[in-house]
Every structure is written in C-alpha cells, then in structure tokens.
Image (cartoon, rainbow, N blue to C red):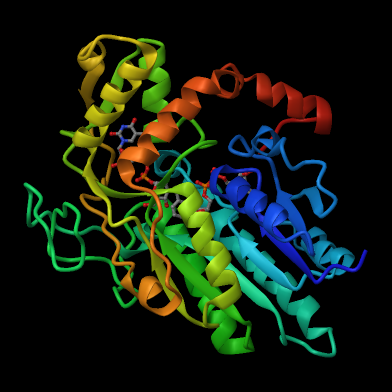
Length: 375
Ligand code: NAD
Ligand code: DAU
C-alpha cells in the first residue's frame, strides 16, 4: 500500500509515546506509523496491545544512538516526518547515572537529526514537506519562585497559581538536573539543525503528564500502587514543590495538532494551567484511591512519609500555554478532578499491568523475545 505519509515515532513504547502512537494509528489509517523504541526498562509493548495488529503500524526495536540502523530505517520506510519522544525521562535516575542521559538524550537526538538530514538531503525535494518534531520538557527553563504560596487566581488562569512568573516560549533556559540539562542540550541541537541546514523542526516543551501507562516510578502511579499495597508514600522534602499537571491524552492531541499545523522553527509550550503543591496532590490521590478501594476516608493518610529531598529539587514549574491556545486553538479538555479519577481507576483496574512491571516479569518477556538484557 502507498501511504500518504510515513511517520517515525521514537519512544512509542513508553508512556507518552504509546498514547501518541495509538492516536496516530487510529486517526490516520492513511499514514504508516513506524514506532522505533529500544525497549529500555521504561519501554513496554504491553502499552500497545490494542493496536499491535493494525495494518498501518510497524514496530522496530532499535537504539536511536545507532546511527547506521536509524539511517536504514529512514530509507526502508521512506520516513517524511519524525515525532521524537525517545529519552531517558526520570529525574531521580539522572541524578544517579547522568551518562546514560547524555548518551540517549543528547547523542541519540543528534544521531536522529543527522539521519534525517542525510536521508532528506538525498531526495529531489530535500526538506520539502518534511517535519522533525522534538518533544521536550518545561524543566529546561529551570525553577520558578513561590511568590503566592497560598495560591490565588491570576490574570492568565482561572486556576490556583503559586507564583507571578510563568514559563513562556521566550524564557531563558536554566536547567538544573542532569535530565533537564540533557533535554536542553537536545533542544539546542534541534534548533541548530534548523538554523544551519534548514531542517524543518519544531520543539515543544510540556509540563508534567499523568494518566494510564506511566511507569510506576513516577509520583502518581508509584503512590497509587503503594497505597494498594499499604506501603509508605515517600514525599520529598516538605511536599511544597509545585508541578503543573496535564492529562496525557491532552498532550497527545496537542502533538497531533502541532505536528500538522505548527510553524516550522517555532516553539510551543504545552501545559495544563493546573498547578498543584505535591502535598495537596498527594492528599487527593490518597483520598481518591482509598475511596475506589472501598477504604474508609483517612485510611491511608498515615502512609504519607516525609523523606530527604531530591538533590537540586526545582521548586515550581508553571507553563503559560496561551500561545498554543491563541495560534492553534488548543486547550486541555479534561478537568483535573475528572483526569485524576480516571487515572486512579485505570491503575486499579489494570493491576496486572503494574504487577508485571514491579515483579520484573515484563523484563523476562523481552529477554525471551529479543535475547539479552535491555538497556
Ligand atoms: P518514558 O520513560 O515513559 O518512555 C521513554 C521511551 O523511550 C521508552 O519506551 C524507552 O524504551 C525509549 N527509549 C529510551 N532510550 C532509547 C533509545 N536510546 N533508543 C530508542 N528508544 C529509547 O518517557 P515519557 O514520560 O513517555 O516521555 C517521553 C518524552 O516526553 C521524553 O522525551 C520526555 O523528556 C518528554 N516529556 C515527558 C513529560 C512527562 O511528564 N512524562 C513531560 C514533558 C516532556
Ligand atoms: O515537568 C515535566 C517533567 O515531569 C518531565 O520532563 C519528566 O520526564 C517527568 O518525569 C516529570 O518530572 P518530575 O520530576 O516533575 O516528575 P516525578 O513524577 O518524578 O515527580 C513529581 C514531583 O513529585 C516532584 O516534585 C518530585 C516529587 N516526588 C516524586 C517521587 C517519585 C516525591 O515527592 N516523591 C516521589 O517518590
């Protein structure tokens, strides 16, 4: 079959990537979707069982750092669009092992850019009709102050906000963790490829995502699972840090819109207009999980345990996503109360998915399928 477009999605077996792959495979049967994923500890093909047999879906297990292999994928599938999500994504892991983050996030992105350049420059139309869309994070901007510690309405948001400043597309980069430093570096490479070679690139910087299929090392799925097992809930520091939460399907919708309608060489911030202090969010998770498990209110409150803070823990992230709303008409579709209820329900209804990861069973499956240890 001749496909209208051949799109390479990297990191499609991960949390956000699997939602993006699902959306594109289902919404665009006229596109061929090639999911390139190394299947590190964070990649899980169980995230995609519902679309695995779709005729327009192809999975390729590969490392984005393997330049020759990536070049081969561009040629084999005639790739004309890239949505790049593959990365090491967990801040705590980056503190313990920064090298892996530099390798995948910086060198891997560079390898992908160079492979796109080599392939697209070999075609008669060169960069015409091509897209290289890099998915990044709000963490590259650093940390904001908590100037309204009790939370009040602001002019840009009808929601609770904890400070007067917001991350805008013009905010200067100031990454603090090895993770955010590696993502900042990859963002710079993407922009440098546009400025130097004319690569038709777009970068977006998004706030914290939540929802189904998130690896249970991240705050929300970790805490839901710990409540289920009556285990302590480790709150870093005093739980005063603020994050801006967005339901993952709203991020996937934004990615779809920006991939098709975003301006080349531009940057868009994506966020939920939904700031929460960690401790307040944790109380909502505890309350919702207890209710859905049939526990009396307050049953798991004593599991909340304050532990040593994360090194270099950024105080507050808050995205101003008005540009994306103004220029492309995007806004989050889900109220947080609805999103968190759906999310807790999903993890409780899909305990086998979580248990398979926490028991390590899923690793054995990949070893049998692909041989050897995963990266
Ligand atoms: P994730 O850790 O759940 O998934 C990452 C995926 O990338 C996994 O499937 C993994 O196997 C794959 N991968 C890792 N190294 C690879 C390599 N060398 N070659 C090929 N594949 C590799 O991550 P996520 O939370 O879904 O994040 C996806 C992207 O979105 C990342 O670039 C991240 O920086 C960005 N982002 C995440 C959030 C968030 O809240 N999770 C917010 C903003 C931006
Ligand atoms: O802002 C976007 C970023 O959001 C993404 O770029 C990252 O890939 C993603 O992992 C996420 O980073 P965070 O560090 O904000 O997410 P995490 O779920 O690890 O932590 C959320 C907050 O909760 C943070 O302030 C640290 C705190 N925390 C986290 C864990 C895992 C705890 O207090 N206890 C915990 O056990």
